[in-house]
Image 1 (cartoon, rainbow, N blue to C red):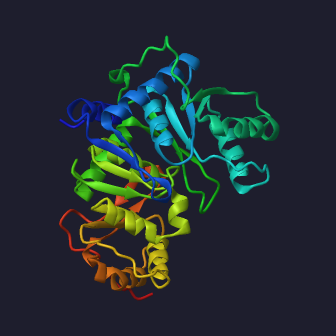
Image 2: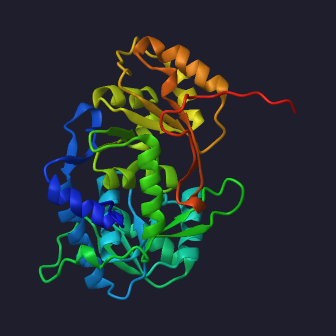
Image 3: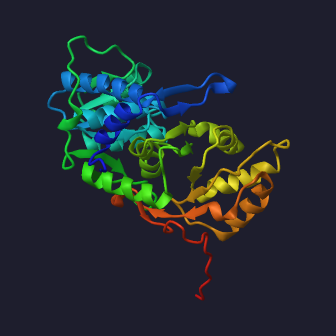
Length: 349
């Protein structure tokens, strides 16, 4: 029987497969990886959820102000467990006139969160912006990297229902100012189940994700889908990909991932970078589904990438063009399981 909420799914995986790895963050500079099992994810998320309920018992909307990585994922899960709507938000730069600080101010003023769950390294910067640039009083702060209150009672996972709000995710703002889209647990579960079927995901899948977790593709497709299906997700820092695109493909090889993807530009960056790389050693033969969305998917990109990486085992049939939007939770259209892909069709203007 399928779970009806993401909280049910996390709880089930923690109960039935407690030692299975849920999240891996690659170590910096070849250092040791950091991994959490499903039991770890549930336990640590419930601690943060308990602090949310203790410090902000009336909260309805909670901003998740975290850098990409494990703290973000745990804080997000904590909001789900606590029964509050999570508002994923990228940390602002320290300069008030920076684009990220201005975006933070607009998002904060629109969402008006009741509390903020963040880490100690981000508090002072965000507090200063809220007080001096937005002109609002200090909010309730929950530290994801602090010690749980000894008297905190962990919330019951079963208390969350499909009709409770799960997320307020903001549109990309590519055509207009970002708008908050309200998603309840029923919306979320329906889209997660659809993606699971379309992508043919199982607990044995391994997914590498470099996408920022603040918009639908990186948030739902990159993190929440893994917790729904019960497979291992490798969370790369987006900055690592931007600095060195081939690192994404190296991670696919290293972790033997069968699913990964990004926007069209990501494949172009990898193709361009290959000409500057010093003979990378890659095995991409296990990569069975390379999704491409978030912007127009170009046939020339597919052809260039395939030509460049076929010698490393990449199969053109892995390409999975898809279309999604925040208003639809995430995915709205893509090839059916077993369909021939990719299909390129030319139309007269």
